[in-house]
Image: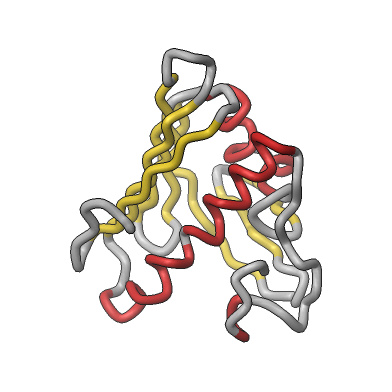
Length: 145
């Protein structure tokens, strides 16, 4: 369960065996994001265009990059990824999402799991959890976009 998410804040925590630098690279590069988040991304002038296999595209503006600790996007509100070294070579990731439209919360709360768990699978195990079928995406109820 998200802790302690409220009506105006979504908060998720995730532990990864991978280093903060490796996780940061997945979050902040086109190659990294394309390996778990969307089919591909194109970053130009601090704007990331996410491209889905079904043809959907959506922009996100980069607000802050502090390697390898913090990455902030304007993406469904303001989304902050904070990465902490766990002391054993792994990463404790905290995702905070604020400023989203209230009527989008019910999609956004579980939607972040659709990003975080594929991130963990890619970072820690080199596995792509996506189903690779444009007819079976989030809008049709599939969690393995």
